[in-house]
Amino acid sequence: MVNIKWEELGFSYIKTPYRYVSHWKDGQWDEGKLTEENTVTISEGSTCLHYGQECFEGLKAYRRKDGKINLFRPDENSKRLNKSAQRMCMPEVPEEKFLDAVKQVVLANEEYVPPYGTGATLYIRPYLIGVGDTIGVVAAPEYLFSVFCMPVGPYFKGGLVPTNFIVSDYDRAAPYGTGAAKVGGNYAASLLPGHQAHEQNFSDCIYLDPATHTKIEEVGSANFFGITKENQFITPISPSILPSITKYSLLELARDRFGMEAIEGDVYLTELDQFSEAGACGTAAVISPIGGIQYKDSFHVFYSETEVGPVTRKLYDELVGIQFGDVPAPEGWIFEVN
Ligand SMILES: *Cc1c(COP(=O)(O)O)cnc(C)c1O
View 1 (cartoon, rainbow, N blue to C red):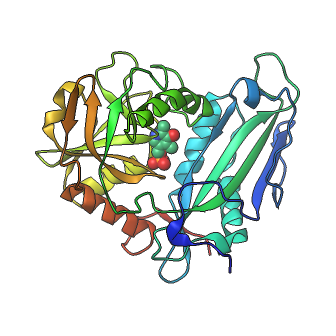
View 2 (tube, protein in one colour):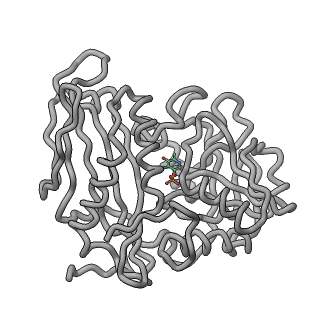
View 3 (tube, rainbow, N blue to C red):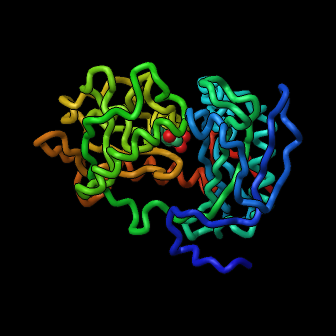
């Protein structure tokens, strides 16, 4: 057995033994294989280095009570990777190849899938980059698709505790730019605003709609949701938001399991009073309750700065229960690895 203190894991790089690598050249993918080499050697002219021609994904493997391993909607990650690839002028990775790569990596590193009950999971990072000898601004002649993984801790060591956020003056993406694609450029643009938010003791920043700066779009690298006083689940809609699989799952659970009205619509900063609770959601964050939001000189508190609201708690328990196999999943949401 590997010597890891599962309860103490955070979200940091750990080198696991195996990763999957496949190359695309002359219009086709090679078969792909597992390797123990955790570095990548590419041409200095690679477009991923200079022009950001790359995209990535993030998903988790969950150890169940019976010892088996679940993936949560990995087919959706595959579809989204291919949408990002299209936007970046990169070849698609066939869904079967993507799912096979993810399963191979999880199985090869099975000892690193944290035990059930620790709250820890195996984080899986697929990525696709443009490589080869290029200097002009054109799509690369060759591509590399890789999947690696590492155990990560539960996002909330102290339980579901709300944290505060600050609205940034910066945008992470342009109105019809690459906001809906999971690409490095959006993240590069978010490093400075994120750093500034941390310096002011906020968890992260809130990005507004880049065209008018009046509506909430994203919470750091997670999507926003709010629960209204009328028990509606509302999450912003915009072509510059990254379509979170967690968010779409919560929309369905809110509607189908909790009888809530689930809405994708505008969330104006001037209308935050309609919400009794708010949160951020994503694979890494799962559900992170938002205590309050700082916007210019005003600080808006939702449910409480110290306690999670009852609807957020209920949604969290349902989602996490499904992911770890303790709660029956909607059809097609769980893929077993072993
Ligand atoms: C990946 C990501 C999310 C969360 O998406 P999930 O599919 O739920 O993990 C939200 N916002 C941004 C900007 C992201 O890159």
